[in-house]
Amino acid sequence: MDQKELEKIIKEFWEGEYIATGFYRHMAKKSESKRAELFQEISKMEEKHGRYWNENIAPKKLGKSFKPTLRLKLRLFVLKVLAFILPLAFIIHLLESDERAALLNYSKILKTFEDDPESQALVAEIMKDEIRHEHSMAELLIGDESQLSRVKDAIYGMTDSLVEILALVIGLASIMNDPFLIGLAGFIAAIGGTFSMTSGAYLSVKSQNDIYEGKVAEIDIKSNFDPKYMADDLKITLKNKGLDDKAASQIVNIVGEDNEVTKALLKSMAIEETYDDPTNAAITTGIYYVLGAIPAVFPFFLGVIIPVTPITASIIAIILCAIISFVAGIFTAVLSGINIKGKAFKNMIITIGAAGATYFIGSLARAFLGVEV
Image 1 (tube, rainbow, N blue to C red):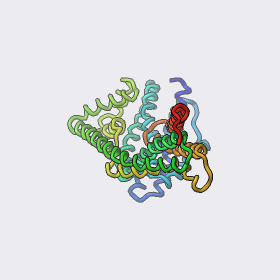
Image 2 (image 1 turned 45 degrees about the vertical axis):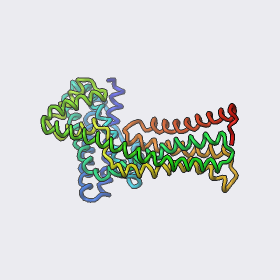
Image 3 (image 1 turned 90 degrees about the horizontal axis):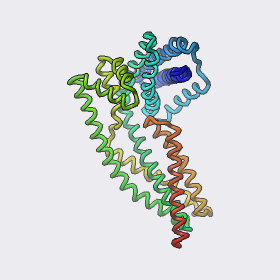
């Protein structure tokens, strides 16, 4: 690893600790006793880790330390504000997904510090603390996870509706001249699609729960029977995430004989499914499927109030749906632990692309087949 990459990783680690310290300290003041104690404990732990990076490791390896920038302070402020608007589990999921991704970078640091046992020991201790902290946080947020599941179901229903109904009404706009009839057709399609979405969501979540419960039971059985098997599974999981054999073995050795830490890390990294209530998932998905159709069909109903052509209504609908798809992409990226910008723009491009494709097909039908209403 060259010096530039090393500095980038160390700085990212320190910035993550700075954000987590400030956020959990803030939440400790705003939460009831049980949560406040845990948030305060985590805040102190993150502050200690921040000092390790900024006062021990950075000066030794980079010859300098870091100071909070305006951008970093603004990011912390935004998280504090969002904590009062969005479910707490969502915000914490955002912070924790960053730390899970950082775990893979720990292996690079450990490899770089092979000639420095003291720094390597500090990084190893930070790793263990973070894994324990994630396990504690998961237990604390069991009740809030249901809110998070509802957010996922809502996004799923809304984005699906946005793409499908927008594509439908834009396709109809290429061959129909009455905006009201286009909007009505889109709304009827949304109502009909709701029945399909609710049954599909129910069956999907039910199957997902079966997979989740099976994997959790397998890990628990291996943990009780012989922890060695669990350590072997963890090593395989780390290698599947992109680590080489030596780095994966090193992380497994650092986790050591702590059975609970190994189990927590394995569940966090190996189980992609989450538990949800199938009935709630079906209801939430269905409701938001209908709501997701509103931005697509609403502009076509404007003709009742003001004169509007199908083209004008189509442009308004595409803009509204593109914006909502972009925002939904941000939420999806946070919940999935993937690149936020990439997912948000991908959502928007897919939405616009689907609308453009159906309009093109409708235009061909009108031009070559004479289809027009």
